[in-house]
Length: 459
Image (tube, rainbow, N blue to C red):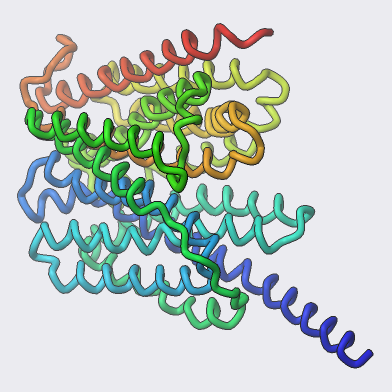
């Protein structure tokens, strides 16, 4: 009886610690998103400080995005063998090491990029492991509540991140953001106190598979920014090696059977194309407003708030609307909205008011598309494979976003790129042309969706 009472008391104590741990993890999750978001908006000031091209400054964003995509898969795999408590602790240490390096070596752009990559490796831990912790440790009736809070936190982080980046860069210096990142260290004692200690299990991480994915994505990035044939050959070789590896290895993090599923591969291709546009416009926006209207980052960050707030509202309602209209209709409406938003920006490039309207419609359309698109994607695989499928979805989304920033930066460095004849300002004309190109990429993704998926879905 005494032992039973002792066990019951221990279980209650552990349950209490877990409930305390979730808000701590949620706070860390929010902070990491804010840090990541704040660096996305300051690319324009980094380019000015180092006197480098848009293509060059894009590397601090593209490589970070690539690391995020791969890191999400790595942390998800490691969480099956190493305790989340330890992984989060290591993640915080990596964030702080990367941040200190970035601040100390702020006069070297190469070191800034390396520091950002390291920092992102740490930031990814909180963004990935919060969801895993909730699904592993909380009862089903409480999971939806805390997973819903992660969606709200993402929307809130966009607002706080853009404001933090804009105001810190304007009134202090963008390198101060590296010091702001050290605030994550204050969360570490609470992580060690409240997160449960789990027993070690056999380590099973597909290092080879992840290395080949990273190499494939990196060589494609290098090719897009340099158009060097060597990188194209390297990309093809890496892709062939990856496909050969997953067809032969039983330990691969994703099996070849996924790629034999036509609906799965079709939706994955669409995700890659459409999400290459999202961060491309967000990366372009501060440059656009700064170079055409001479706006400072603090004002630009304030102008972004309406789009983020309205997008959060639309995202919260998208699930209910998708149930009424169906995923197919919602996805096609969203892609049409993205296309229209980019064309509005392109044709009214010299009106700051219309550009804000463009960004609001753009952000809301992506928020509207997220739930039905991922629901359609997960529906192509069995329930037992959904975890692997979501991990690969996040990976492809991250790689697509990095590619989008890369090809947009290349276009920004082409002053002769002018399609619309009615724009007198040559700088505005280049940005207008880029928005037209992004709208064409979006139309291509809509075409892909209709041909590969939409027309096959019965009413």
